[in-house]
Length: 428
Image (cartoon, one colour):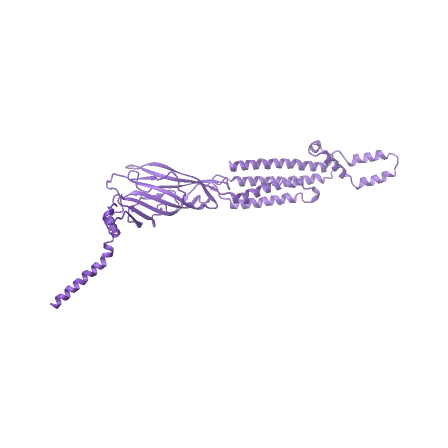
């Protein structure tokens, strides 16, 4: 009798222990709902009760941040938020039977069917668009909402001919990997890239965005496959405030300094050294720009071409300064040709002509004047002859002055034309 009571007592303890162990989780409504929904759920089967029906997948893409734009690889790195909506007809329940639970939130761990989306123009892992680590929200009517954040490295055709005021249009192409439009449809929720959570960067700013849809038909041996591609396009513009201060304004200042060499007197000794210094500065600046300037598939940038033109104008300016010195210190007794006489009369004012003639008088003339004072007769005649011999109508110093002015106007015209063309091409 005592042994039977002992066995009954052990059985009673076992039953109490099992009930105490299984009751907290076994009777929890959410746990019961998970067990009910995913007990025999197959993630490889489309979530439709009728196999002939389609699964409509709605996509919304939000641009989070532009991380980098690689001109050499022709690619863009950005962070996006991807929201997916579809209906799973296998995952429905009556909330009244499960404690009024209307939604379930759980992390994605390949425990639910998801559309086989892929980024077609991705350069790294195009088939993995970031569902790993995403969050799933399931409603009682079977509506599924999936949210994920992913970093993409996609192709982007970069044209930097207008650097540093260039604009680029990049595209993120989403489509299905294997499912055709007959089984799974793909649509965009809105006709734009959502910028609600976009973080602005110092280099790029988004000026426009839109969404386009393309359908492609592929003829295979046994069937014609149709795929829909959603193109999320966003147009970005380089923020040129720093580039304007660091690049364009210094180039324009160097272009204006290049003309100052024509106003430097020949006697100063800096007639050629100044334009050579400007030429070397321009060459160094062109080297710096070439190193920092991104590579482009549409040819040489307008900025490089403009600096190269200014470099050529600087070389011509140095040559003109050397020729001006040659004219100024020319000691040849040969008379000035008609062309130079016409140029002097056209470019050198009368006041400058008189000043130049007065400066021509040298020490020999002064000595002749002293000797002529002792000769009372023929005094006026000798002085007139000496002035005529010492001060011809046009001197080589006047030719040098006229040549400087002619070169200044020519170089000024070339720089104005090149600058106007450059600014027109850059900001048109």
